Image 1 (tube, helix red, strand yellow):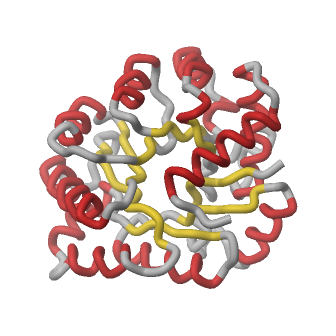
Image 2 (tube, helix red, strand yellow):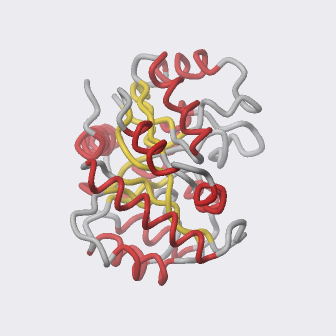
Length: 257
């Protein structure tokens, strides 16, 4: 049974001192392909460099909404992003979006950074990894100004109404360890309602370790635990869920086998 972790941060050195061993452990658990996600220009370079050093690992480059103000203040930031996105093994723009939960960058800066990255990614023909927290209404107002967007709603943990809006726009839905410990029934109902042909699995490692690993560092190998939980929740055979979600990830990100 083969699985893909579509969202992890293996280059976060404070958590992973030997990331190559983390990759090896993932492969032993059947998680054969990983996507290493960038969160700022500097961080994206690290994500790309690590992906280029490991078989079965790809990367994204992008600026998280928390870092939007820094992105806008940096000289030639869009050109730097374009160079990163042109590197081998870079498969998407991300993670980008809006985050009103903490507002570490002002809303206006988050919108400007999101639009700049959308326009860059569309020009380069790449999909997007979207981070949206407490900001769905404003997010759709921006997204709907553009055509041809492909991508995934990372760490989706909202309800059926937001799920419908994600699916209406043709985006994939990424579920992670949150589903194993949430007590929010609306989140679980949405997780059950995601069409299998639009579902991908992620960890967000080193964060959001699933049950029974709460309190520990999350790793890509935990995709196997999340997949088993989702198969049981949704009433699907684990092998079938693994096969379809792996194909979904391959289709969206153009992963080589």
